[in-house]
Length: 292
Image (cartoon, rainbow, N blue to C red; front, top):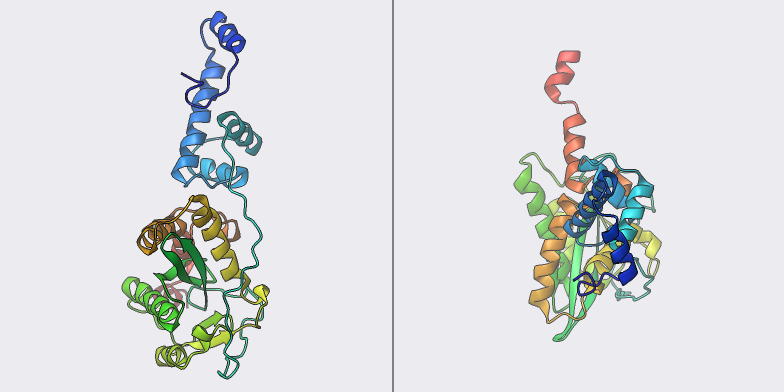
């Protein structure tokens, strides 16, 4: 039965274990711990490596060291996904269109609150029905994906729809939200320099910001998020049938990414938890007046 389930074990090992008779309490505890590690791995889309698995197990109340987690992962035959290097360029610059200045200048650690800086970009996904394009908008402070969209064309409506969804996400959860003073950063793709998208930014009171052409570091945080999507979702499938399947699976991945996935850059919290902690720690107007 073990062999049928892909667990390699020699007959001599089996008979030796059987001859020992009763399993010790230490061995039994180790088996339960290994099962808990495997269950946590499955619950997090089978993507966590040792470091994130260790933090996830601690958050779940399991008193385990990092080396113990690594050993149990080896026993159960699980490993984290590995991100590959990609240099596919989707940016098509319109040299005639005016460009916003670069207001970010790679200072990705500068934001001190949500909705200070947003970053945006899109990527392609090959499917059996042809290419589809997935666009995202991310809050730099919390790494939360605020808007996303999947379309079969990479025109302005693709990125415009993502901006509208990001604004709706914030307005739906906070009636005090205002986009005035917010900075929206992207690459110099023609979709982001188009007149329609520029007008949408102006109408929302958002300041546009654009990095240099062909330089991933000028939009490094967004490139990182797209890389995670590719590694944790897109590249793990043998093939995609078409837009509907990509859209459905991306929706589930974004939900997990925002509410459950641990991010080392925000103290091993999920983006939603990180924003919640910020709001809980921020002094209210009433408390400020009381202190005064």
